[in-house]
Length: 204
Image (cartoon, rainbow, N blue to C red; front, side):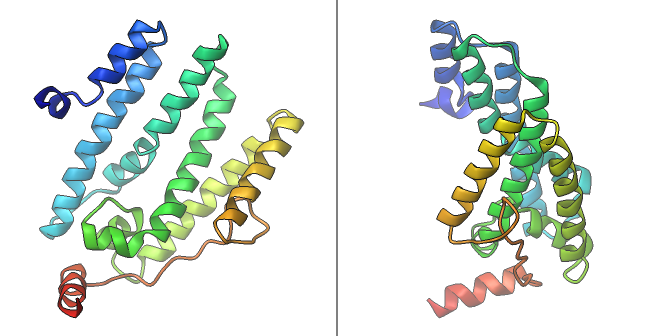
């Protein structure tokens, strides 16, 4: 069991090697997973101890967070015997970012309670409670603009199928909106996380 703590991907790597499916790009994405977990520990520890964190680390972490999706996408190319489509991967990278942000907004209070990485938490730590939602909205708008631009470069049928699936997933999640990712709703920020956790534990 100790080897799983030091190298959690070893069993997966061994299995993929055995099946002839391991590539350098898949290996690199697994390294991204290690980097994400290290950054998550670093950033969450800094927030708990009221230490400074950098926007560079936060943005790096949110992009690394989707490493598992990229592993699966790369694995599908291998299984289909196809060359990786770089345009598709670039588009999916932006899509993954928006999905991660959406999930973080939904899970915000839980992530505060459990001291998990959450982009809104990090922005509050960097920019303060009043400016954080504005700065995050700016990043979302920039990503949506790039998403819409890349979507137009995809094969029309693929683009249509992808948008339909996003809309289905949005409806399944209980949201209805003109945008594939639903309506953006930034929750009220928690100014004093320690006090919030203390109050929640006391009320229980």
